[in-house]
Each structure stands twice: as C-alpha cells, then as structure tokens.
Amino acid sequence: MDKIVRVGVAGLTHGHVWGLIDAWKKVPNAKLVACADATPLLEKAAPDFLKTYTDWRQMLKSEEIDALLVTSNNRESSEITVAALELGIPCLVEKAMAANAEDADKMLAAQRSSGKALMINWPLAWNPWVYELKKQIEQGAIGHAFHMRFRIGHSGPKEIGCDEYFVGWLYDEALNGGGAIADFGSYGAALARFLFGMPESVFCVRGNYTKDYDVVDDHALITLKYPKMSVSLEGTWATAAFDASANPVVHGKAGTLAVYGNQLKRHLPGQDPIDIVSAPLEETNPAKYFLHCMETGEEPTGFRDPVIAADACRILDAAIESSRTGCAVAPK
Image (cartoon, rainbow, N blue to C red; front, side, top):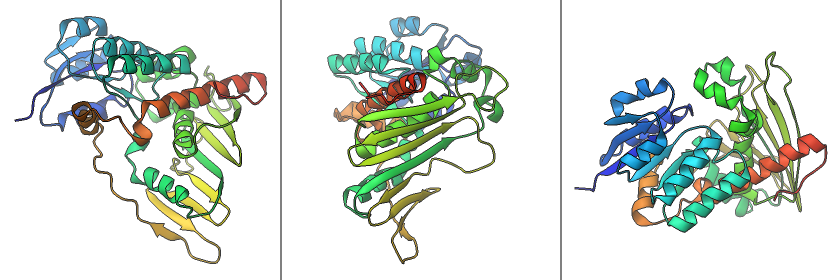
C-alpha cells in the first residue's frame, strides 16, 4: 500500500481552489488533513478536511503536512509558500505564482534551499496542444516563427459571477499585482516564456476601459520584442460574447500554427488546414503529477516549472512599468 500523503490547503480565496481540492480527492493515498482560511469559505470546505484553522501559520505549526496546496491571493501565497518550504513542506501553488518578481524569487530561493518540490499550476498546462505547439515550432513546421498573438480573458470577475472573496483580491492591485494584466496577462507571459524564452523588451498599454467601478485595469495589450520576432498578448476583463480565447496563433515564414479550441492546425500556402495530433499527456491531474515530483525528486517540467512562472512575473513587472512610463522596458 502506498504511503499516506497528508495534504493541507492554505487559502480558499483563489477561485480555482475547489477544482484542485477535487483533484486531490482523486489521489488514492492522499488524505486531506487540514485547511486554513480566514473567510466564511472555510465552512464550505470543512466537510472535506479532518480539521480547519483560521490562520495558516497555526495550521503549519500544529499539523504534520506532507504536501501543501497554496490557493490564497498572489501576495499571501508567496508568503505562505516561503514559510512552508522553510519547514520542508512541498508546495503546489495556483497560478500566477506571485504578485511580482521579487516575491517569486523569494519562493525560488526557498525551494532551492529546502530541496523540496515547488510547482505552479496553470490550467493551461494540462492542454496537450501547449507542448505540441512548442514541438512543432522547434521542428520547423512553419519555418522561422516571427510572431505570436495570444488573447485570453472574459468580461470580468464580477460579471461572470466569481465570489466576493475572489473578487476582493483580484481587484486589489497590491494583492493581485494588477488587474486583468495580472490575472490573464500572466498566462500569455508564461506561454511566451515557455515557447520563446525571455524577450529583450516589453511595451504595454493598459487601463480601465469598460467598468463603472474602480479597477486598475480591465484590459491590457502587451508587446514582447525578441531578436527576430514579436509577441502580442491581450489579457482582458472587458470583452463579452466574442471568442473562447486562449487560442494562440504563431506565424512563421513558411506557414502558421493556430489553436482552435483544443485542436492545433497547421496552415500552409495553397493547402487546406492540417489537423495536428497532440500527443496525450502522461498525467492530467495536477495533484497526481505534483505527487509524482515529490516522490521521485523530479523537477516539474514545461509549463509547470516555477522558473517559467517567475520569469512571467518579470515580464509583467516590465509591462506594468511600461504602462506607467510609456516606454519599452527590459525585464529584470
């Protein structure tokens, strides 16, 4: 029988937490032992856990925890992760890792010092086309890739019905790191970093264009400059009833790769679009994948690598600075 893995959850205000709790329930040898949160959401989660706390620090002090799911706001998630790693507790952190690169670097330093697993979960990471797209680009399926455009978002957290606790920190720039730029711009920044590495410079325009309430930005347009290519990213809380988003298009000298829903297609001159079969992932449950990393000592790979997420924070830091200065900024 596999060893029982005692799982704790720190924070319930990240709306993705419920799907991740369900993911842990599907791990046969995982036991949900404790959950900590300071909001009434704790009552909703309580039936799934042996014990609940209103303070994550007290939970870490009182409980024997083998793996920690960190799902608070972007600022507190960094603080929790550093504290847990310093105690030798592996951490699975929901995107976007941190509110800024400084906090992300603290997490990386704690991981390196502890030697324990750290994984950043992006819902996008479990789509096979993400990895097939990278493979096709690297194999030269469209020749030299010179431009990618990627758009992701919706009409806004309030508008789609997110709970008040999730909305409460998403709209707080200090806790989130921005508005739509932090929420959805982070996906694009991470995807660009995963596919093409770090850009030379970043230019950004963002603002509150559609909301009649206070929010730092509901739409952001970010341009990344590489030596022989460019990337255009949109993160939005402003667009209603248009596309499903999260469908990148990569233009190359010899053709184009584009994602429609979950289908990757190659467009070549004079031909009908060609469906590209994406190899299935060996594991699509983030909890099971994280446990595998814990047990084997393997580093999370690809889109789940915390270095990718930290570099995405650097790109967004540069984008936010650019939006303030009106100038292109080199990520640090």
